[in-house]
Length: 560
Ligand code: ADP
Ligand code: MG
Image (cartoon, rainbow, N blue to C red; front, side, top):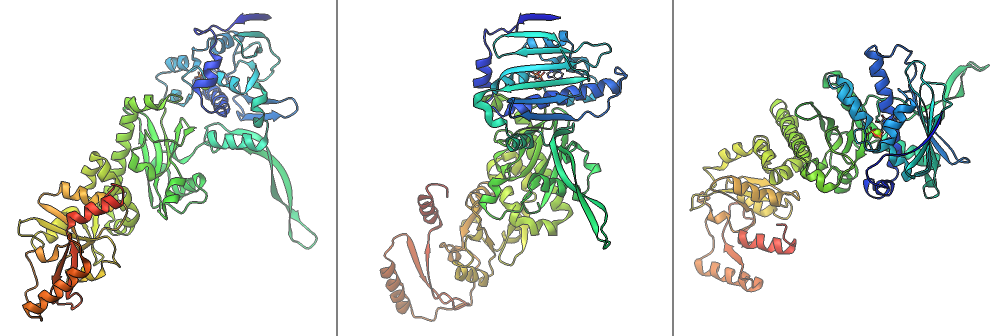
């Protein structure tokens, strides 16, 4: 049999379009072709389990190889293969996705979700790196004739009898000059590791040497020999694909190490697992934060049916949760599409809301069940929570129950508890409740002890997010204001120490005041002369809280 024909496509020549616009990154050809090999294998297993394939499934390892001399890369699977008719149908009709049809057919079947491709374009990404592509395939069907398909990247193809004797498909890429970088072991390893590391079918790329015990030598010491074994590049059942009940803490930690070998142990994690109204699985970890650089490095990885898609999850994960690590996997997130499309996609918004809710629920659960350890972790968790509260109303609603404030007695209070604690003691003459806080324990030390000596409570709010958090608290809590402890606030509170008496006469005190005012010469500063119980601050120089925040804002370029 031999036949020549034209690939039926709507656009005269779609290849340049594929090459230029669909994929920004030509390395994803391998992701697409290996995904197809995985799909074909899953389909075969499915047919076997339905009793529609009676043959032996056997070892279905996918093999990736390359030949530097011949300039080829070959992807071989032992999946369902294709007949010549199927090649014409599925490969030639570019916009026709065989996977879509398969999904229709097996809609009821649970495993249909395991079929990656739905776009009908993946295969053609091969032409981003190859001048010529050859398919050698043999269908699983009894008595099938092997088929061969060759196409040089124009819209014409050639189909003929093939030479394959085992069930499955070989895709042979004749790599073009611009893509020769891919004819390299470590480059291919890198791509496989990036995209295919958690695919559900074993993938072999060459061999590796391993040392094995080999009896004992004359002195009775153990001997070793090196043996060549298949280099399987993937973990076919990563943690997120299992049910939470199957997993122990060690399993989650081991998976974290697999993702980020150099990172410190995470604080805790959340297993995402939902299949209605959208499909989403994943494990999100709360990292220990050492510094900003650390946070940036380990990004959340986005997968679609175990195929790595991207670690740019900006539009899928709410901004404040970008600090988390881990994996999310959803076949419902559109791939290979533009960012603006992603933003407008309603699934994406729902997924983002769901993740936010899950994270809030998990934190609430931890707080309720182990408050002590929650408090110990607050230094790390607090940053996420506060960031989340100031940026996401939905999250804030929930976080109001478990967000903590810490004072200088190292005690933690929920927002409600704290309001309760200070509401009678710390009021100004306008009946506003005043929260006192310090942003720098060392620099504001004398102010802090002065406040404490007067019986007031002082909060520590010294992290970078706290400026925003202070504004948030003021907005949310009625009749409540937050004042920095070194602002002109202490003497304006109703509850004052009565016993501390001024040791100076009024004239002396006025002189001292004038002396300081002259020395400072700033209108926005107030000078107060007093004998305080602590003796620490006979004279205080303070700045109005409002003025101070304005000044801070000007210095920080707005942030405040
Ligand atoms: P999609 O995977 O989204 O369906 P592709 O362009 O990647 O789109 O592939 C088109 C079709 O070609 C597949 O749906 C499948 O029917 C067929 N196909 C591609 N690769 C293989 C393979 N290795 N084995 C069997 N069929 C394949
Ligand atoms: Mg595909």
